[in-house]
Amino acid sequence: SEERDVAHEPPPLLAHLGRVRLWAVYGFLLCPEELSQPGAVELLVAVLRGMYVLPVYADYSILPHTEFEAEAKVVARWIAKKEDAKRFPGLIRESRLAAFRHAPAARASARASLCTKLSLLLSHALDSPTSLASRLPTLVATLQLTRAEVEWWVSHAGAAPKEVPLREREALDRSLFDPATVQALLRYACLLRRLVLREAPVVASSAGTRLSVARLHVLEELLSQLPREKAALPPRAELLLSELPVHLAAAAAPDAQLQGLRLNVLRLVYELSAAPCAALLRRAEALRQLLPELHRLSLLSSAIDQPQRLVDEACDLSPLFASEAKFMQA
Image (cartoon, rainbow, N blue to C red; front, top):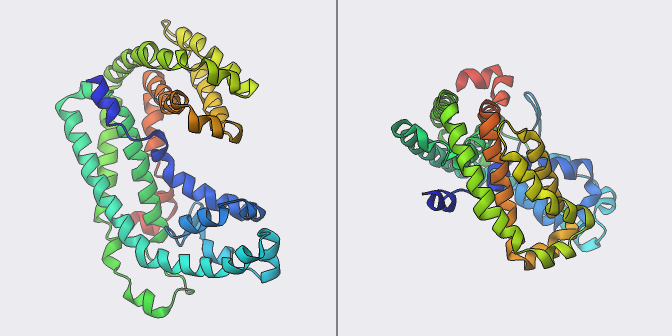
């Protein structure tokens, strides 16, 4: 049923977790003074415990921990609190060692789990192509997570930073980088992409029905619960939220231009996710429920008018092709 499918959908932002991790590190590298913000050092260290190579462009990558190793006076310019600045070099060293020791096993486990999930999705889709649309949010999220795991494998397979002690490098279990699961992930991703494109008319028709359900039974109900919250929103967010029912009604028309709906949804998500709305989101349940529904609305609209772009972006494995050696290994 519709309710059961929605209940089993992954959180919308989970699919972007790999990119968020990368951009968190990119952001602190470009603006290290932001490390003075509350919780910033803890966030950086948590992310760095999951990687020891940072892809930059094509097959060019850097060692992120090394980039944050600087003289004490430089670190003091980044981090205002003396105690935090003094602890920072040790935290970076510890996170590098933790990443090298534990991340390969964690990512190998994630790749194995994704193989199982993609296999089940493929089996369900082959048995019932009409179920593709109801499972599309899960499928797209799983493909995006798959892409992130393949990218991690591409950048880390064979990497052994010299800053890691020799005994740790020698003790690394190389079987954790076995390409067999990567090959399986690529195979499942290609088969699912081909199936979605083959069944595109069915997917689009079902997505259109689900979009109407979302508009009539979810979004309008949630919007009706928000009069007080709307008044407390920043002006731009309040305007976008007030105009949303108009855009939803326009999207229901035959041959509607859904790009406009997605753009307005993106604007609203951005405004609701910005710092001025943080306190309001914490206390307004309907507003918190609205965010995942907006993501879902955008995804369903893409399934109607651009299913190929939707799955192509989710399956984009161009980093794998940047390195001929890694491509041949996979």
